[in-house]
Length: 348
Image (cartoon, rainbow, N blue to C red; front, side, top):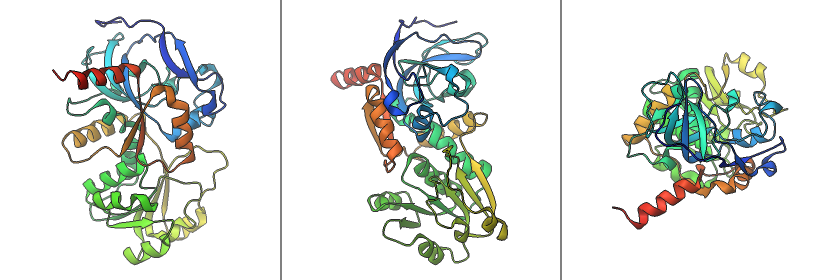
């Protein structure tokens, strides 16, 4: 292992001993992980809270067996590299990075003072992008980009409907579609219609007060070219009716048991290609690098965010599980909070 700062052990982390949901999360003192070949140890500054986090804690993710307990959740991470394992090149201690955690590989998540990431998954962050802003990107941004561009093959000029546009994935999807040159419709509650307008959504839809099918039909009489469903769970009564013949339906994988899925026959009758997508581990670095660059250059902006201390991870997860979080909840470590406070006190 290489590195110029030996982290103290144990570290503080939010961890769980059973798959009993957010209520199983509690603060624990755990050993600082040691990076193996091809890995980096990152001192965490900020992490995002995603639906995948509470699903992990509820035992809904099949790639997290009992053997991984005690489990440190967390897929999104942003922080500073402090050490690297054997064979790592081009990633030095002191580098500011964003990444998706190696949790699916049994290497733990990001909700602690330190976390392991695969060096190949780490994306360098420019100084203009804060750790908190960077933590809004990985899982939701990668999922949206994979769904729209890699799987959905969205093209300039096409009409896309984003169901669930006010969450982290939806807001990144709106900006990805806009940069692609697509025309955008998106659904959300009344409090987010102004946000849609500011992001260039051509057809904002208040699903609580408007008929979604009627609004889409008036905007795209033949149906949209692509429907990105970030919500699932039967939130759209008849998604096939909203899509043109030969169009595409891309659903973000929810991994919820017994989820009500759309009628496959209705898709087949119109020649609609139905795709289920999620954050791809293999393509994550390329997606993340593109989003970091677009954000640093001002072509995209991080979604509205709320910061909470890492100690409030369980409450944050519960809120995400309930839905209707605008943008992202970001958890910051004590280290990051202290660093931010010191900077505000003495900018020099």
